Length: 419
Ligand code: SAJ
Image (cartoon, rainbow, N blue to C red; front, side):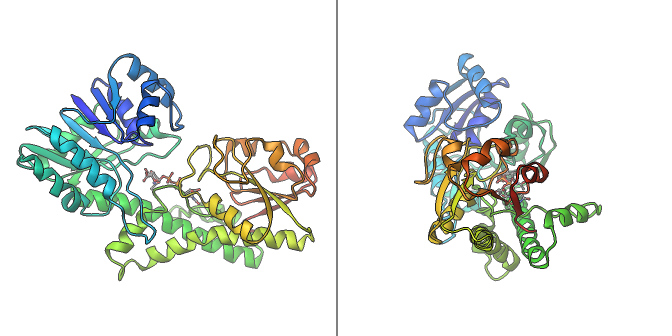
């Protein structure tokens, strides 16, 4: 098939590359000219394990081309952002515009697939009004479906293949043809349903995780107050065959889990009560983390503390800072008049005034290390190497990722969030 993938970000680019390397002729489209030029030169604008070699192969073989405009194709896949606005309502302009951009190229027999995560009814209420402009009979001459991506950053290429997929068609034929297409590389099971159910299922999955993490964060605060280590307690509770409590932390970041629950709040504010409260609980964690840091330094009698913040990505071993709780923690520490430095080996550009690309500059004269992201690089840190750069020897681990014994042996006071 010829496939046009609209949106070459964290989902669109890996998806385009996968189809291109599995027998299809793919044309990738992005509105950002710089992104297009980079991909043409086989340069990556995002970090993802295994992406570079797969992109090289797709471009070198000629099965992937890229430009800023769609072209005629059998299939159009839309993978553009669906963020929330400042008022926490969905911004569906990218989805609408991407859909509209395909319309001049649509022909009888085409299939349009939406991969972006969207509020239920977006296919019907936002895409359909654009697609009918193609003057093709929907469901017969033009097939339409929602096949939400489910991959986790860092393991995209494993999960693209092994995860089950939900395929929501506007009619049975749309779902059937979408399933057939993804069978080019998906080994998981394809579960066919209607488009609106698929939209709800995808948003439910991320909301489940958000609510579960909020529960863990609430438990962490309770445990902290009664002097129990929440990490140990959750580990023990999860030995129960029907219990799976998620992990606490400095907040929930990324463009999915911290966003999608708001779609349900917007859709039905009367009913979405636990969902709304969970969002607020998780959004409150950066402030809790900053206060915890201030309290620890105060209790230790450290005057004019300097905090070395380690980790700006929204989670471990990725380069993505979107909605990262670290940014909020830094802001909250700033508000508490603390002097700061920030370091993340995966974030190559300085996004914060406090950020440095040099780990030892970050640690120089620091009173305490505040670990916000569980990068492998931080687990591997050698406290013996670090301690001479620091003024005080305190480490606060919000992800329970460092080896406590190793740091204590080097003379550090080790604190955990939720202990
Ligand atoms: N987090 C916790 N505690 C946990 C797990 C995660 O605090 O126990 C935090 C992380 O540190 C991070 C945030 O939550 O800041 C989100 O991370 P994540 O690993 O839960 O999820 P994402 O955003 O990387 O990917 C999710 C995945 N959804 C589910 O697992 C249900 C992925 O499968 C989706 O494809 C992706 O959202 C998406 O694009 O929707």
